[in-house]
Length: 76
Image 1 (cartoon, rainbow, N blue to C red):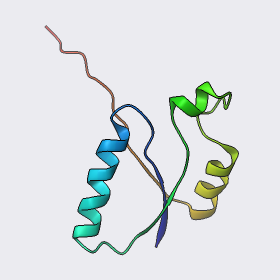
Image 2 (image 1 turned 120 degrees about the horizontal axis):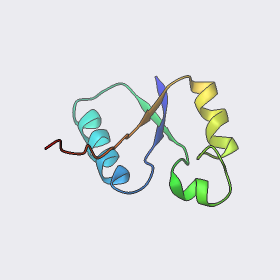
Image 3 (image 1 turned 180 degrees about the vertical axis):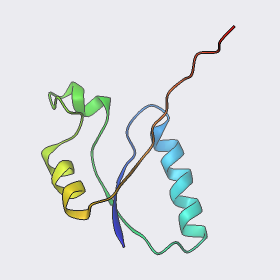
Image 4 (image 1 turned 60 degrees about the horizontal axis):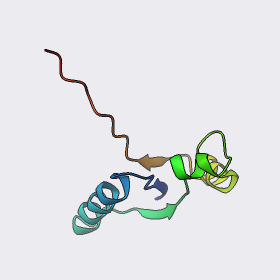
């Protein structure tokens, strides 16, 4: 099965690389197509944070793996 993969920015690339290494070490039957998504894409003028090519790839493949990292505020 082929899936779209977005590494994003910030710590996303490091986390995604680790996830893909785990998948590969376990012989997960996946093929990856990298897509451009993230703040850096938004900063280039793409208001949804992804390139048109990325959107088309995601729509064609029907599955996107991405890192979503959100710092949770500690409640005191």
